[in-house]
Image (cartoon, rainbow, N blue to C red; front, side, top):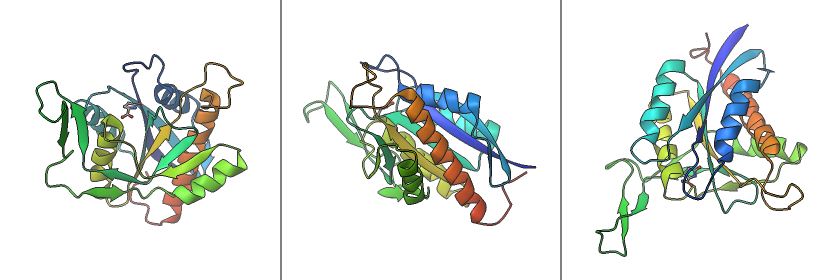
Length: 217
Ligand code: PCA
């Protein structure tokens, strides 16, 4: 059977976040796999990334070089999210605090000087949302992955995808995991993992439907 390589990334814990659901979801998906999709065996590889503007993309890029994926789905925690948020676009902007700065300590710079202002993802977001509604997973589309490390990774990733023709890449923002399982806010790691399984499965089928076997070995 033909195989397809997929990378799912998540982030390490960071300030105020002891357990990042994106790390747990990427680990679980790589361990459990997503089964066969449309006649393709799917190899899911995890990439666990440091929360750092300068180190995140090199770390993901190393996993991409090693595994040669046709699809990359990055994930990260969005503390304000109430459900899964499928990100539509990445913007060429990073904002961060810098003590020496005049503008109240906030510095703004492009992710890639001279790069396009924004990129759209080519993940089949509406078809994924339909799968989510069958599986009762709360989700919305979003046009804002913020201006911090998640957005800058997403921008670098779409830069890469645009240079790769048929490769598909996207970013999924994850909500916090509730401390109390009966809470109506946030989503348990099991459900977040189900969501990512839907994202990868639908994206593989979409990629397959687009024709051209160039990236299938
Ligand atoms: N969320 C952060 C970076 C790592 C993560 O999981 C963000 O919103 O940019």
